[in-house]
Length: 508
Image (cartoon, rainbow, N blue to C red; front, side):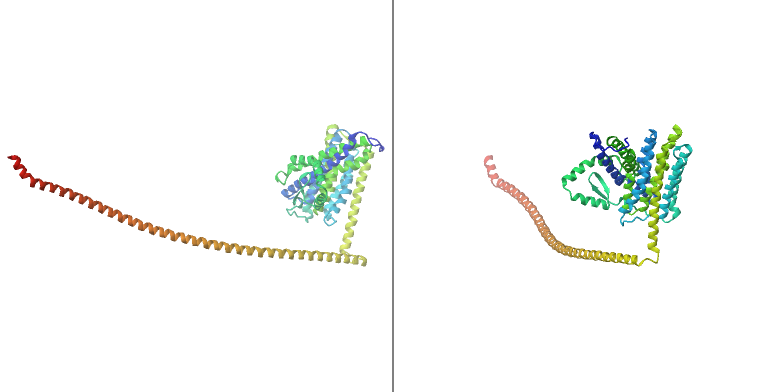
């Protein structure tokens, strides 16, 4: 709002509230990029066999350009063209200078290997986009907007076919972006990298209360992202929904950064031009920086640089051209401030030329040092010293590794010997138990046989006694019958002996 930066501190508490809100938005962008967007891009690349440079120039660039697209749509339909085009210019300068400078710094070896053909492809289309933007502005009609959109399709086609044209890039079906998960405060899971390990080591040096306080302050946004964005680690088939929801999250957080910068301009009096080239540009390009840095840490230079330059190309050909095309169809021609915009386009071209010059000079110098046979003696001695020191360091490392392996081998041998002794003891105890069980089984078997023999003898004795009982019963019956017969015959004899005299006596 004000042309001069006011030195007085504002008295409204809202002026101090927007700074932590903007920092928190940057934190949420890092969470979304690391945990959701890059794994989704990686899953899409693996599913459709997309090479790294193509994925970086198309998928990653398109997803990270969501903030610029939202800002341009709002600015164009609110008839404030300077905001949208200023955001494109600031993002382009940030992408070309900051991202291309950060990627080699965070790479594993301090240098980033990029295939010259892919770099020249993206740099050439970036230069074409700057020239076409210079040609189209300040008054854009339907034909100019159509040309910009057509070049967006041409760029996508060239990127898709470049791997086949150059023939030195093969998709291996693997990707280090999703190797390993590590938990961290404020989010569910993050990708493992060297910075994550350093962060964890840094966290271990702080008191538990501080970590709990930081985790409590940072966890709500990360938890909301975990609840709303599909995680391709848990749901591998939902990579498209994870991609677009992550893009929406980045757009919303970047738009909040833009709103915060506008409020900072009102409260603090910082000029809009300064905020647009710094805070707003960083806010809208922060996802690009995070994505490129994450890929550069894995040594994937093609994807990192293609994302930085491809984002600038898509910013002009699609992010800026698509809303202007719709606006031209609805309202007619589109007009912007020619003085500021054309100077900004010159700045875009100057930064691109500077990066190409630096990359070209470094490439030629590297080729000279590698292939030129007449190196200066000082460089040869310096190179020899570096190689000797590197060899000594590697020898020491290998020696320490060999010693560590030998100690591990001795430990393993001791463990194997101990296990063998335990095994032999267990085998002896098992054999002793088996012998005891066999002796008990034999004793039980002999007892069973003796019991069976006794039972057989008892059964025979019972049968004999039964037979004797039957014989005795028959003898008793026979004796009883004989006694009855004898008693009867005795009675008859007595009757015959005494009956006749009695009969004679009583007959008289």
